[in-house]
Length: 433
Ligand code: URA
Image (cartoon, rainbow, N blue to C red; front, top):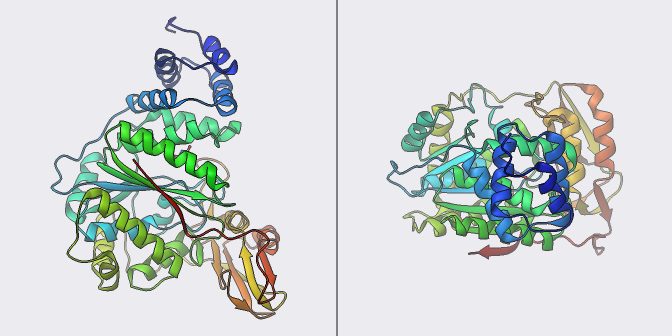
């Protein structure tokens, strides 16, 4: 091992609330990626960072060191500007699926390198893989070809992109060190900067179903990421958006593809359509593209759907085949009449995960058809005995635990009553560089 520093010295320095030097940070990331710093030492350092924080210089250096651990892509061969969108994750957040083809239909290239779900939040790749034949892994040349031919590509990040983050993320996941702003910001931004996009819109979720349940914390995360992106020369902005209630009415892999197709067909739930259009406008603004056709019209007239079909089939997906259907379904009925006051996103996300839509450990298989259909959203009137949820799974023994989560997910009151926790507006804040 290089003797420039020792891991213990770096850990102790952060434990004692000191700033790490640029040299210490670069050394730590390089040595950890190369296997010269042990997981238990890195775990201690991550916990010290979670507890004692990092300043902006430390976060930038940490991010740049993670970028430098792997390859950096570039899209200079493309004739269009590139823009990407990244969400910090939530329940029912399928926005990438309609958004990428929509913005591509408006004249911008979307290189959307996406991830898999872990815990109660879903992952774009798991959703797309429920389409028969669709392939997530592409070589860099294949990625460029799909982008050139279709205007958008949704695929897995290759193993060469920010390998330091892959190791660190897996370690954070098992050491309780995920929810730290310096670590989340550097993890997301290292991948996005290495991906080579010219512009980036961040959708930072807040509310019970998000990493950052308090809007103030979400704002701080958004500001940190915008600052990192700006220093790296990216055009960047962030929206802080609500994740106190699930997005849309379908949660789960194939179910979310189904709902995305509804949106691309000009229908779909109002909140999914609204957020898709707000993010599309933001992406076009950053790319400095004034489309001949508004995003709203491109959804209605089928142009976004044409890009979606082309993009899916370019990766082997067959949209003429039926999406997978679950072996078992069960309905949960309203226990009383009144107004549905709230629906806890976290409980619905956990229930969907318990039904088999998500994984507990990296690498586990997910059920394509598992998930939840929501029949009423907060604000709507409901009648005792009417269906509130339909649960889907291939293993009926999963119903019981999912039902227990959903029983505590909803609050029903009289027409005039208010939810015990005030609902968040869909778009809470906008942060730009
Ligand atoms: N998504 C990431 O890529 N990294 C994090 O740390 C959290 C969410």
